[in-house]
Image 1: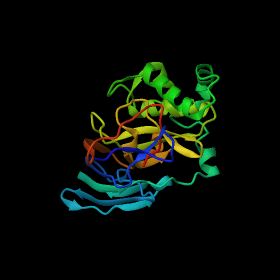
Image 2: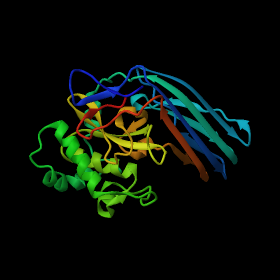
Image 3: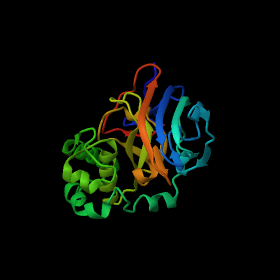
Length: 286
């Protein structure tokens, strides 16, 4: 059985079993109406401590398409495609073993993830954050409080938000999907002078299954996951991409020509039993 295990002697810190095995896959079907460049971020991030057996196959009208891999921040890997018009299929699968080692946190990280960004307008939410979370000093308590606050004020409604909506719009509408929850969490934490960022992940146990987005906050020198949706156990998450907000972590973007996304299928499973979760626990993506 694979489950979350307590580490470091702390009863409120959870991590993935180093002998765990997780399986993920993604299938995208696109239609390129014109010549275009497409950027994909669907592969598991390259993290020390993780071993991934993976395969990425891309075809246009049945013919192989070459992808150029580009190293992104925090182990992320983007794949660039130069497409001619046609039907394009993207098939990715991976078996992931092990647990990611704790990465070094740099001063550049801290500075970058304190600043407001396109979808996490922390400067506009400063008054709200200070009023709602005044007096909370503990990092662990603050993460739990922000997660619970966002989770109780938003309703998870698929299709309710637009790609251009940020944290302020999400708070006004009181509904959204995972990226909206994560943006609001990130914006509130930054407004409280806690560095925070967005991570795109594969999430075993997620229902309905899809790509997932969570927030990460810098507490005690480590990045800790905050997922106000409570839709999947945090200890099982597998990092894909990391950045300031969804502008940095989108699984697909296109430039230079019209491209339609026709189909998305995602799977993420774990061998054995899903780990438990507790909103008050400190958890890192492993």
